[in-house]
Length: 149
Image (cartoon, rainbow, N blue to C red; front, side):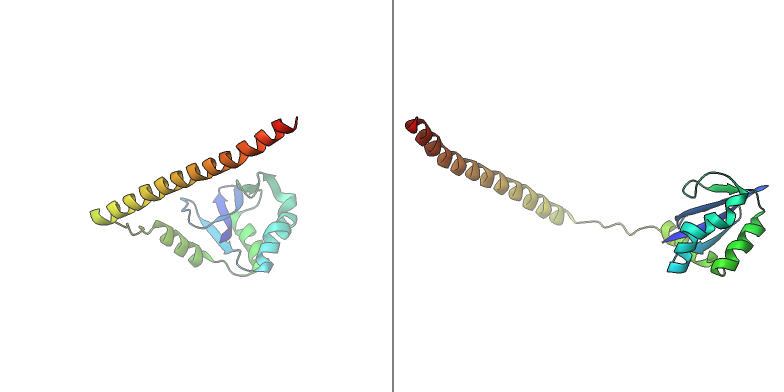
């Protein structure tokens, strides 16, 4: 899920649209793009709303605006509702949690290796058979062409 993320950058305020899960050393406010109204606002309405304050950048890399952090947050909050900071924090915690490591026993690894190697061998034999049959069908056809001429 993507989020509208407002960054406090001192005199300027940054706005980006990004997936959840990045932690920042500076204050941020986030709105989840989890319904059509928020997505429409993020794609069209937000650029129109903040256009006259735009300093540079895009939402992919962080657009910068000549407004204070609180002013930008207030303008977005008025259009899409309260921020979803808790949801963003949950996404960070979920991304940071260690993934369970799957370990196979030696017998399982050996069985997988044997199955893979034997299937590769069977495929090789099958392709040789197909090539042999195709060649055997093609030779009489070519000889028939030469006999006509």
